[in-house]
Image (cartoon, rainbow, N blue to C red):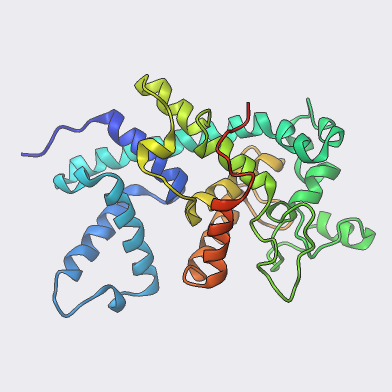
Length: 304
């Protein structure tokens, strides 16, 4: 007999899974594909090295899901897996939308920490007045290798001539005083104080959005890191925060709407995840994670 499905458990784990592992892809296909790969790898002559690149990515994600929810392996019926997948995705969606709204509400105060009174001009503006429609937010989400202030470039961008082309990362992922070095793509990359502050605000601080969501449900001492064993910054959690900041700075209310360069917040998340996965074993990626753990701003005190 299968165990009873505890709705709250799977929803709460969905919050954490969406923030730290995967926030857009379907859960049921992941479980089904992951179990299929598990059955394949039972064969002694096969190892993970024999899987395709896509299969290895699915396998890693599935194993992360099992590490968070080990009781998942106790369910086998199709109906149970469908119900559990819906509950997990319900948690993913709830966290994603909750974080989006709350981070957007705090974005002016977060930007004011760096830009002072210039950020206060955003106060009270409608969402469609942000993004490329405002000088400050435009400077943050415009790719670093594009000069928006150049008249001919601005006209071409507004006409959609630059959609689907390959551009550099948006300015907000770099330290505000950094000057990206094309000879070293890692120089300052994903070391932005804005990302650090947003990470604390959403995930790690005692007053974080993650902790608030858990507290509202469990009435116990909050703290997403302690509750789910998140002891360090992970590439996927960093990608999630970068996506949420991208969305908060933009003019669209939806994650799937494209900006002037043809990039939606969902697509931006996928690009960051792919980039981190591609360089996961490189020294530069490890240096980035060490920087996040040792950054002076990463104190866990949160935004009051």
